[in-house]
Image 1 (tube, rainbow, N blue to C red):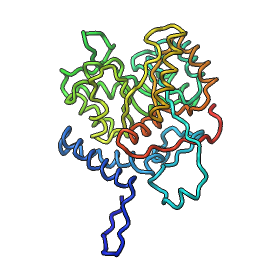
Image 2: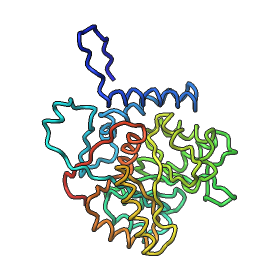
Image 3: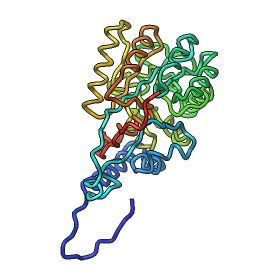
Length: 330
């Protein structure tokens, strides 16, 4: 943000409300970062600054991250003067929806059915199945955003799978296991937790994870398997883009139940401007989701990386980017 020295004038212009929001958000993030991670957290602020400024929405393209070419993002209130806003014709605002299919990799048949969904649907791959790398490459070639579904410690000793991150591990071991998981999924843009109800509640355990992610410039999508999850505040304090899941689609694997969850997802998107759902590569989920995507109107289906940016702005009190249709979603 540019800084200007105030000069005495007869009538001082008021600071635009949107800029006051940005200043307040900056100081809030600074205090949160130091409170959670001390001085080491300050290294993440430039990255979070990218996220919270107009250029940040497009910085991913310069780094070669997946490009979304069917949505135009324009930041309302931060880049335009009031007179310019009045001169423009009103633009329709569409609620944004992101869908992530995780637990990918173990079932090649249903993985390919998920890959056949619209490319805005993100695909999250478990690192340990043998066919994960091949299927992740297929998904990336089809235009999907790819995530690593990192196994993390669950409550009640439920097994999250090989090489899971646990709170009793030293930080070096956590990072070693994280790096192994990342190495197994080519072309990833971010991660989300597989299980992890115990691990994601522990701030100290999350710190080495988000520090490692910051160096890779990727996001941490919180599957929110625990209502006490600390993923979002810790990740953001270290400059790692993060937001949480709003709806699980298929806890009950019946068509009517999944349709009801999709309706809830649309309601959440209408209420807040953006909402994110997680589903799984079950036969019934993929069938219902394919029909729903084909008939979706009045909403914009976006990659989860863009939904995370929009949710971050909304939750920090910064005007959310307007979504205007550019061309039909594939």
